[in-house]
Image 1: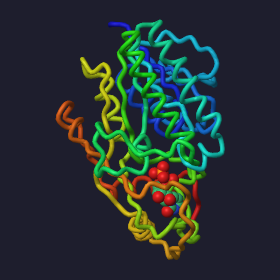
Image 2 (image 1 turned 90 degrees about the vertical axis):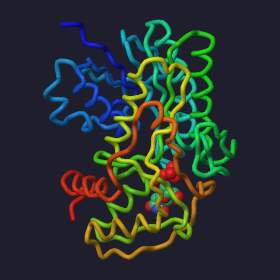
Image 3 (image 1 turned 30 degrees about the vertical axis):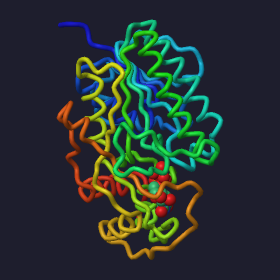
Length: 319
Ligand code: UDP
């Protein structure tokens, strides 16, 4: 048997990171998850896949701002607070993680000859003036607003990746991730899907910010993980950037009504002030990843929501 490949997943105890770890274990990798547990949770690493493959799984409670030595073949950088309330609470930490932390991981990949995948974000497009957003769009970001600690850290992270590819020859790939939801999305995250589901299950009002006409395109977490693996494991993609998202576009008001119906909740919908710099619309142009890698999302919003609601019912929120 050839030796198992080693994947390092920074942010491995987070919502997306933990799903990625599971998929890598299923693919036969040895997986080292690193997480500071600022927003990740140990309980995300306790499912049956982790138990079944525990001889190939290691968890290190470690911050990527500190030196790290892992002999990895593949480095996945998913370390960062990612929900608006969370990254705004930890704004300086978010800036440091996206800049210094990414620099450390890129240096590790260079020194070990590992391939590197950067989890970037649709936030690099800011409040987009181009719709839907292709990878070639440069974005419309307020560099000094409340969201900039995340947006600019991720933009800087992309710049760093591209220079490590151009100047240091690291095989770097970047995915720009659009809004993602699914089981293990932290109920305390303050995001739209987690807030609505929790509110609906508790019989509390569903809080729609602004007039609710702003849009988002929501992808189910298994689709995202499939896209991430497609980008990481295909040959000859060094220096390439891909949007990974579901082009189905919903107003946040429609999402509230849908979740209300799927949970069978009688909660009212209430309107709250719109946070500053909240993007008015967001939808990925996924023609590049479709054409180059044959990837497309499979799980419709309603189906993904049913699975997510089911998980919330069983794990986090009692009716
Ligand atoms: N939002 C909302 N109610 C909530 C939480 C969020 O209407 O309880 C809105 C928010 O203003 C934004 C959208 O839903 O327009 C998505 O917010 P989220 O924080 O999930 O992610 P974002 O895409 O803004 O990073």
